[in-house]
Image 1 (cartoon, rainbow, N blue to C red):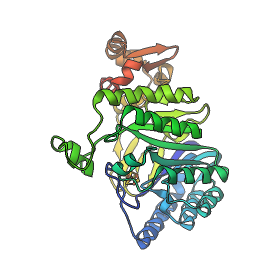
Image 2: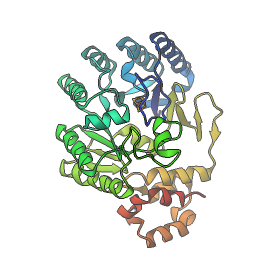
Image 3: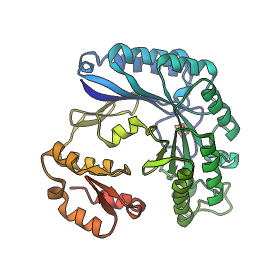
Image 4: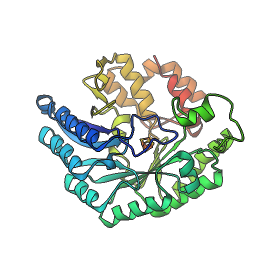
Length: 368
Ligand code: SF4
C-alpha cells in the first residue's frame, strides 16, 4: 500500500480576518451541516481507489474547523475510517482558533484519534490581534492552550504572523518569547502578505498608505527582515530547530503532513477548493486534473524540497527521474553555489542563510 495524506477543508469562520484570502466565510448552522454531509459523501465515494493506499497523515484545515460541532467532526472521521486504512500512528491534526473550542469538543477529537492541534494565535499583543481582525485575545488563546494541555494533547502547533501593521521588532520578539515559554512542540511563523481582495489590500496594497487612516503603517523592510532573524535566534534559544523556511519544531515534532507536501508524498483533498496530488496529477476539487510532465516534477522536486533546511537529496533526484541532478541543473547549481545562495552537505543541496533571504529568486531559477 502506498502512503497517502488526506486534507479536509472546512471553509467556515466566525468572521473574516483583515488579511485573509483563504477560502473561508461565516455560515449558518444549516449550511455547515449541509457541507459536512456532502463532504462525507465525497470521502465515501473514494471506496475502490482507496484500497491501494495507507493513510499516513490527516489534516483538517480551514477556515476554522473547530467551529464544527463535535458530532460533525465525528461524522467526518467515521467517513474517513470507513473508507481508508488509517495507519495506527498516523499524524492527525485539526486547526482551531481560540474561543471556538470547548472541553467537550476536545474530548470528541481524542476519541476520533486527533493527536495534534494547530492553534491560530498570530500575536500575543491584543492591539495587534485587533488590527488583524482576529476574534480572540491572547488570554483566550491561553485558555484554549491550557485546556488542551490539561486534557493531554502532547503535540501542539502555534501559528504566528510577523510584520503586522504597527508591530515593532520588540513587540514581535515579545510574542515569540511569550509563545516559546509555553513550550508548544511546533511554531509556524509566517510574514504577513498583503493579498489582493482583502481589507488590508485596500489600505496597504491598492494605493499609497494614508498616514492618518485608522490602521497603523506596516513595518519597513529592514524591520521585517530583523523580525525574521529574531525568529530563528529566539526560537533556537528555546530549543526549537528551524526545519523549513517558516517552521520550527522541538526535536521529533516536525509536522509530518507538511513534510509530506515538500517531499511530494501523494495527497487527496476533500472539500471546497481543496487541492490533490496523485498519480502524477494535480487538481483542485471540481476542476480537471493536470497531468505533470517530467519537467514539472523535476521543478517541484527542487523548489518544494529546497524549502526544507536539510535541502534536496542528490541521489533521491536520480532515483526518481533516472537522470543526475547535475546533468539537468548543471548551470543553475554552479551559478547559485558561486553566489553562495546554495551549498552542498554530503548528499544534499540546500539554501544558505543568504539563499533563504532570496529564496523566491533561487527557486525560480529551477524552472525548466
Ligand atoms: S480565522 Fe483563519 S481562515 Fe478564518 S478568516 Fe481568519 S485567517 Fe482566514
